[in-house]
Image 1: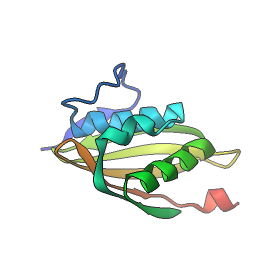
Image 2: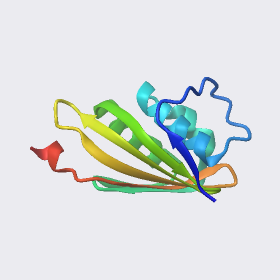
Image 3: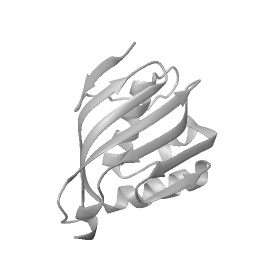
Image 4: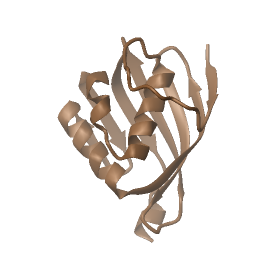
Amino acid sequence: MFYFYSGNSEHTSMNTSGMTPATIAELYFECWAAGDPEPLRDLLHSNVTFDGALGSTRGPEEFLEGLAGMFAATTSNVVRLRLASDEDVVTWSELQIGGKAPMQVANWTHVENGRIVAVRATFDPRPIFA
C-alpha cells in the first residue's frame, strides 16, 4: 500500500518515538531546511548507508558528516511530492546549491523498525558543474 504526501506539511515536534517512515522522511527534510542533521542521529540504523551522484557513506558518523556538508551547501530544497509505503519513502524535491540552477532530485529512504537503513539520491549533477 502506498500513501501520498504533498510537500510543505507542518511537522512541529521533533519527538521521534513511534514515527512512520513518512514522518521520518519529513523530519529528514526539515533537518535539511534547518541545516542540522543531528536530530536524525537516533533514527539511524547502525549500518546506515547513503549512495548518491556525488558520494557514498557507510555508518551513522559518515552519514551525518555527509549530510552536514550537503546541508551547508544548499540554498534551498523544496519538497514537491512524497510517496510512502510501510518501509519506503520517495521524496521528489527541487534542490538548489549556491547560485546554480535548481536540480530535480529523487530521494529514496528505506526504514526498518523505525530506523533509516538506506538513502539513495538520484539527480543530474550537471548544474553544479556549470
